[in-house]
Length: 338
Image 1 (tube, rainbow, N blue to C red):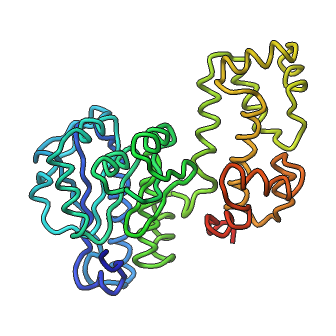
Image 2 (cartoon, rainbow, N blue to C red):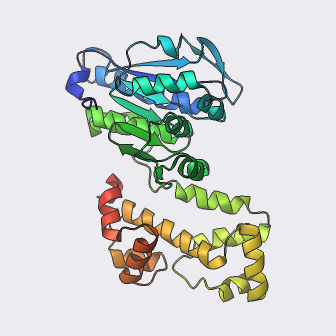
Image 3 (cartoon, helix red, strand yellow):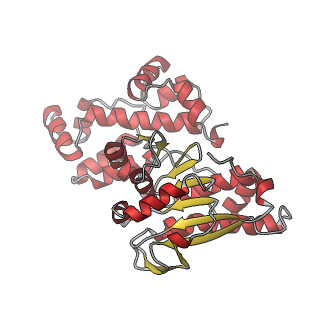
């Protein structure tokens, strides 16, 4: 593994960030992170932190020339990936075209060769599935867009953190969907140049320095919005706003104006899991966010999320996450929670 990059090392020459794009890549996956690095380079120069640009960015693709993204807009890759030249940070974009890249052995072999040549490898969104197909995530903890977490876990046996905005495992970095690539890029700028630089870039781009919560806050509510029945869509949103209240089948059935038996059957048919399992999962996701993003005590978190006591929360965490709430907080606590 190559030694991590540092600000002092970056002053000698630009740190070269190369993004692999491909047909039907998500355009924001490509340009979002690169804009973060470009803005950081300008800020560092203007602030007198470096006399040369700290970062140089480039887009490569299977072939040089125009690359049509999933939005229909075209990007121009000045070089094919084989002619990428020196790379310090290699990033792989996501998008609906990822499956075709996963079937391209030449691209996968190139990615494998880069692993020992670059200082760090990163992915945005479904780019993680490309890294996994190349074998670069073997033995790593990783994440991807919440919609593809099961695919990453089931098809490749990866230790997936489905709630994370981004994950670092050694010099391999993976991020969740689309704009999470910018969160990751900000984290890399902070790693290279410190919090002041990263915060300045975040302010300039009107971004969170570290956004509150994980991607489960989107996945659960998105799942609710996809439910076929308007009644259950509204009920699921109602549940998420009342996790500290009685959410028994009987109360939920009354809310839905149904008998408990009919409600339980209909809920499972429409949502895909029992009411009890859905409520438990919503409470667990909320507790994970509270532990990583707040300073509340374990007992307070348990009460706010509907678990009643710290001991109940501890048992739930051990059963489902195989870690205690305190250990989870130590591992995943964000700057907002300090």
